[in-house]
Amino acid sequence: MAEGEVEATQDGEAREKVNDTLSRLDATEITRAISAFARENPHVALAAAAGLGFLLGGGLTPRVLGRLGTLASRSYVKSTLAQAVESILNEQARPQSQLGSSP
Image (cartoon, rainbow, N blue to C red):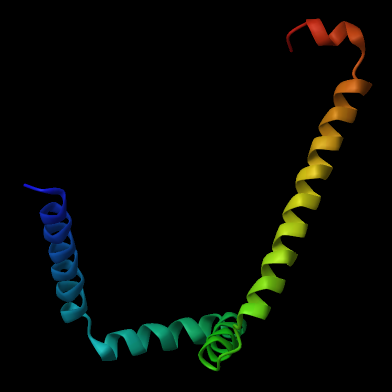
């Protein structure tokens, strides 16, 4: 079998699996499950609804995505650098006699 035929077969099988799973879902059962979750976790449900409304309302523009990416990157770099500096300082603070011995 050629590579393209294998991919087409896998895609067809994946579609069948998704369609089979979707056909077994019951809308009333899903509604009950979501309602129960919202009653147990009202703050999470409100946050999810607000986020979904923001996304569907077109609030996720490329400019907003760029700012979110920049914010996430800064936070990651800041925490990574802090951990690296802390580990270097801990190694330097450790007495020389402990460096050669195993714990």
